[in-house]
Amino acid sequence: MPIYTRAHGQEQPYWPLGPFKIRLPLVHYRLELPEFIQGMVMFVVGLGLIPLLQQTMGMSFEVALAFVITFKVFMLAGIALGVPMFPGFITAGIPIVLIYLSDCEPGPEAVQAVFALQLLVFALMTVLGVTRLGGKLVTNLPKFIKAGILIGAGIAALLGEISEGESVVETPVSIVVGALLSFIFLFSLSFRRLAEKNKLARLISSYGRIPPMLIAIAIGWAVAEYPRPDVECCIAKPDFVGMFSYTPFAVGLLPAEVFLLAIPTAIIAYVIAFGNMVVGNELTTNADKVRQDEKIDTSITRLHLVTGVRNLAVALLAPPRRWPDRSGPPDTPPCWNAISRAAKPWTPSMAASAP
Image (cartoon, rainbow, N blue to C red; front, side, top):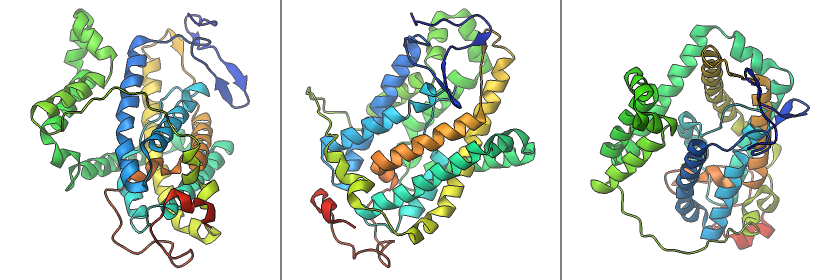
């Protein structure tokens, strides 16, 4: 049981800290089994990035594991600082980031490019949060513009998944079945009515998208769309010291002119994130009509500030986290070749001499 308890109809307890509301597990709220299981499963899913980090960045398993853990910890910042929405990936932005990084050489250039992008997103989110313009945009923007942003983001995400080499093309059975089950378990009114009467359906519903995800994985193994894992028992030791070689502190920063190249991508990333904010705000607002037991403070200003802080922290400590968004090694000249050193194969040992 938590130390603080919430009165019926009131807001969840917190410690005030400027614009933030500090909430800690077992202090301000209790741990719920469905959320805990979902968090564990999603963390394991995130570990799938380790082979990609090893392949594209030349990292060891231990360093890649350290990067994944670091990023996952920062994803908890929103809940800890008073945002009632859990952050995720901006899926629709992946194709844009791929284009932005398409000319970058793996190694220092990629780290520097992603750092520039995330730093600009941090600046944009922070300015809009401090000035409260972000909140005004979300609440006052005409509905037809909001609808256009949401539809465009959805179409971009869909096109990114059905293109050549993407998940729907490579693993159609498991992805399609998982998507259909997700629609049923999460959005079907018939299934909701069934959950009110059936304990098993209610249990499935409480675990969100985890059941359809696990079913899709099992189907993928059954139809040989996914290779069956080779399980080995061991204790992994993340190398948090080694990950320093892949941060801006080691590879160096780029001239100010380079940040100009990241501005269009940063703006597009915000536009897509703006759509997520609109969805989250609408969901919590609509939920208030039927959930009278708890008051939810959906502050868009706080959401901007928390997102900005998280982007800054990730940019400084885990920028290669977004590098696996690329589908393979570059086949074009380095994007910073005109203003940085000539490209050559990079290893962590070169970090000390990188500009």
